[in-house]
Image (cartoon, rainbow over all chains, first blue to last red; front, side, top):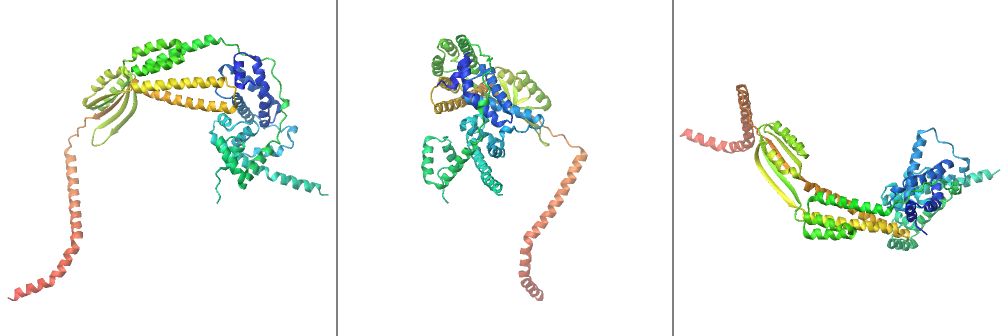
Length: 178
Length: 355
């Protein structure tokens, strides 16, 4: 399989097919990245498209110094930060879409209770499957800091998640009783 | 208390596949026998499983836009030649500005490296190096101590000289003591070509009490730095090529990335050294000490009377204090001997009187 970096250089050289291949590889991961961090599906899709647009615009400046994956998530993180700034300036955040309220609600609520940076590190590791080194590059943190914050995040999340099954069971048994 | 050879964070890194092979083997061996670590590992894996409950429907992501502005294919050969010309130009300017070069050995060494990188332009660079190799690279420092009758005027003149000679002040301290003249200590940075006229003008600021000039030859240091820098650039280029054409595993890419990052760090450090060295060569570091010729003004009659009164008062206080100190010091001994000698003395006195 041709590497992402080789595809990027081919695209830089004018190959549309190379870009199509890159898009096929990263369309879903990037959509998932935005979808987990934003309430709106439409905005997640827009930002995924904008990430690729940014790649197209910056093609001439691309240098194969880092993995394409890190490069793409770097752009995605910047776009997400801009989106959040816009959200803060505008009116109150919209209510979550109904479809979002599913079995994963407890996980999301537990994640929301984490420190923002620890949450971001944890999500990049678990959902985007990035290595410690890639996260370190993206967030401009030393690798050891990434590791210790990831550990803290996982331990905090464990504490936030633990009571849930008990509560569920208690709730369920109360409802079951006549 | 039981100590674990593997820290908790390391255990997590092991589960994430982020430990080096050697350490991972140690972690695996420890995990097999440690119940505490097995429990922690189970907790961490449990958290991972819970997180996977949150799945998003990525199939809803939209497809490729119809219009993709594909970048035009670049005329690579022309670009490469242009880059080569620019590189040679920049290298030439650096060589000349850095310092008017150098020893035969270092020049030849530099040539070999340049030849390996840009064979077509090695001859031109060699000519430049040959032309300059007989000129040594000197970093100069000077020190002057000057006494002046008009401190303010001399200071203004010094600032004007520094400005006119395109120099600058590295450091400037002025002291004004009440019982002595003012002093100014400054480190001036004067461009090397302006060195002689600047020193000549500064000497006219007053009477020169002390002057010294030193020159340190840094030719070998400079050429050695250049050679190491060229080698590092070559290594960087090779690693970049490997990265660009790589087809190996991610771990290989990361290893190359790591090496590349280290080499770039070294290059940055050497660039900083080169800049500092060039600065030492291009600018004379001149330490100047400017002293005011201080003459105490003669006192008035009132002042002298006041001084005499103060002196008399100080004498009185000093005398009284001395007497009290003497009494305190010798008093106990005097009393003791007076008591001891009183009765024998009185007995002797009476006897003498009776006769």
